[in-house]
Length: 265
Image 1: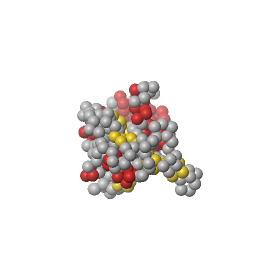
Image 2 (image 1 turned 120 degrees about the vertical axis):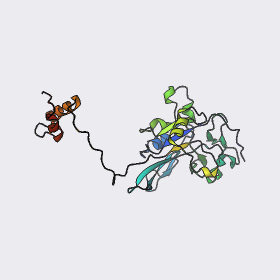
Image 3 (image 1 turned 90 degrees about the vertical axis):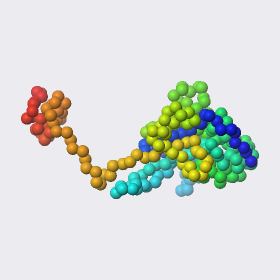
Image 4 (image 1 turned 45 degrees about the horizontal axis):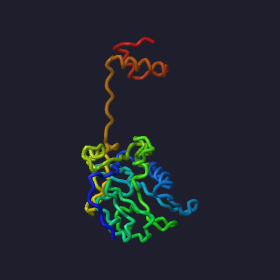
């Protein structure tokens, strides 16, 4: 079996904000696009045009309907799932050939396809379902944190990010050193109460999740009252714009403002 290196001070990983993830799948598709020609290439697909297609995806996004306590309505929470690059990864220690290993310099967990025999022990050991078996090549594949991007000096510094982070349109995915308490990702985790996935298992995931923020119950919440017009310059400007854009229908707000002052035009 494979042994783990000593714990590293540098712990590269992701912080995923479940509050702003909209489940658009941009992270999954960009991951597929980059890695099908990079470190994990190829990411094969089986029966891609049939009724039951399948294939290797290193990042998947699930959706769950959640009803919070005290809320009359439920909400959909989108939950991205990929390798968490654990500090104590059972997928590494169970590997009989050393193909699955953890890097000492940054804590990234990788698979060497040259020595992987496709025994699937690592996928059975991983409780997060982060391992994907490539049927075409008979080897296991997983998220690499785009190790061929983040250290690539041919990229501009701002582009040395995992493909999923770079592609996220809502900024729900963050990348950095979670071993550095002063890093932006570590501060974000501290501010938002980020948490480990299934911490009771003892694998110590490096990646963290930020919980969804509380929502106002739309069925019981009352809309905030609009401020009363006070004759200010802004109110007179809005009155003038309302008259220009809707000459046949003056708003009640404009009528109230007429009593306090008019804007010529």
